[in-house]
Length: 185
Figure 1: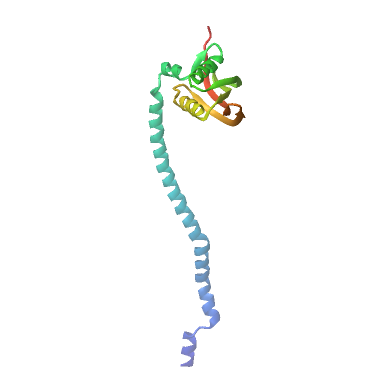
Figure 2: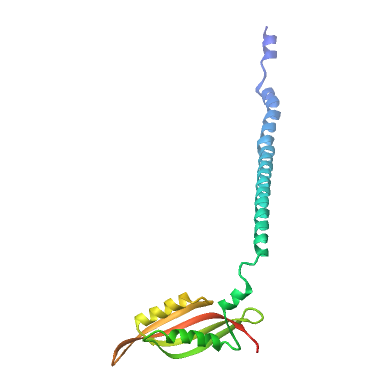
């Protein structure tokens, strides 16, 4: 009977011997196989997501190509949006004429600060005006420039208060940037 009991009862070394392969299989499974499986699933999900995005972007690209084929603004309309003439002083003259219409504003000086070629005959011209005015006149000029249909941008406004015999006046430096199309005669 004792022999039978001994054969049924295993020593701790034997149990460790039989459990070791199972333990190693679990370690390999959890340390190597499972992370690789998760990485594979993640790659598969990301690939599916990228394919959906690609289909979406292709549809959007086709829509944009169709929009680019039809011109929205005709060249005749563009000619009305820029100043054109033999030299950039056409732009200065147009702006000066607009400013002189405002009561209480006098132009002390003006000059072209910078000319930059954009296209073959299209230029970006920056003009600096030095004005003597009051607050109402400056506000009127800025409003008129904002309402101008041609391509003009207010780049910088500097205002100084001058005190004189007649009271306070504003000395304003106004830098404007406009598009100019060179027309050859």
